[in-house]
Length: 355
Image 1 (cartoon, rainbow, N blue to C red):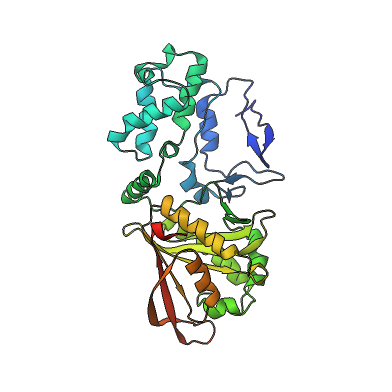
Image 2: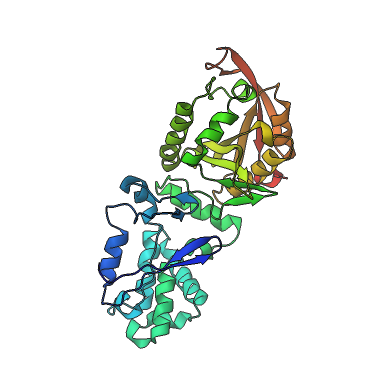
């Protein structure tokens, strides 16, 4: 693909890349470049992020599940639209590929046109019946994510239920990243390894969390990070870092495990590094994460367990509205530390109980 420049425009702390082709570069050539078997174009400095995830050096396998989330708007709208298809056909094809039910496509296509300033009567027209600017708007409508047209938690729950019913199990990162009262929930990265190791030297973390090795090494941190993506793609677990909203310095961890989209349930867990405790960070992180799990995944119940001696974790749960529902005897085996079995308190939270 020759004659193509990619100028970078700074905005909101990042960069917007736009393709410019002084020569006649076809839509197919651009599409081939974006969907090629190679990783994204390497950069000398900087980071390429998609939905909060660093994909600068992502492999083909890592990029595969997110390519279907990417869309393009071409500079030449006339060449990018099939002249033999009506606008309704042009817009409905990607909707159906994204899993929108047939009985919803009519309403969704009308909504897409409305959002770009066109009318429902335009659905039956062919591309040549529009001006260049109008054709560009159709291209933008085709590339738009229709899920953003939905509003209200009930519609989001229906969309997610349909998605998982079709066997699409992958969990996506919150977009935009979740923020509340000075904390930011973001995906983990290799740059967090040393901070993870430092935090997990605190004896109280493995004392209350049986899956965390003690002593904790750099190899343990890397192994944990490597396990996250397969679990996320399988739809069973989603791990996020709790970070300072200002400098993104690591404060702790929060995650959802045992995600069950049939029963619409999940378990949540969290920990904070010693320097981050006593400031309400865990409470705010749990509150905003639980709201996202209810509203965006459509979950109907969250659970968490706490050691009877871990009163700090219990206060965090109760501060967000979790109710203690029972006492699990000999619940967990702490095989990394003492090897003993310990009891647990079990807490539950329903959507209308979150405080």
